[in-house]
Amino acid sequence: MRKRLNYPVLPKAREVTSKILHDICPSNHSIHERFSWDKNSCGFCERDTETVEHVFFQCEPEHDFWTAFQSWLRSEDTMLHPLLYQLKLKY
Image 1 (tube, helix red, strand yellow):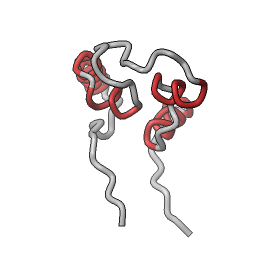
Image 2 (cartoon, rainbow, N blue to C red):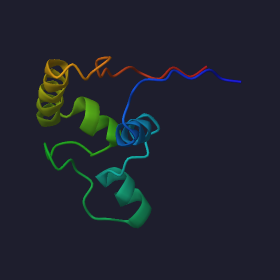
Image 3 (tube, rainbow, N blue to C red):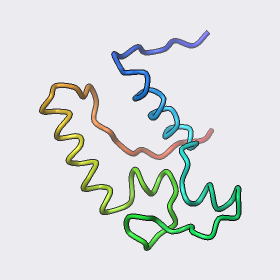
């Protein structure tokens, strides 16, 4: 049986976080692959392919947004841990 950490996180925030961590958030790349949609590039920077990883961790315009968002969460004493990007290790 696995142990779970319980944090006071709103259900919607937990759902979004889970979708990000499991790479199931819709993105131009996933829609392009699934439904042969024409657009595959990032809607924010227009340079790279829009994947979940790119939007949340690599896109420069989005990085500015997430930095400001984390600052706002800290000012409201809402954030427990910083949002960090770490590579997944496969064994």
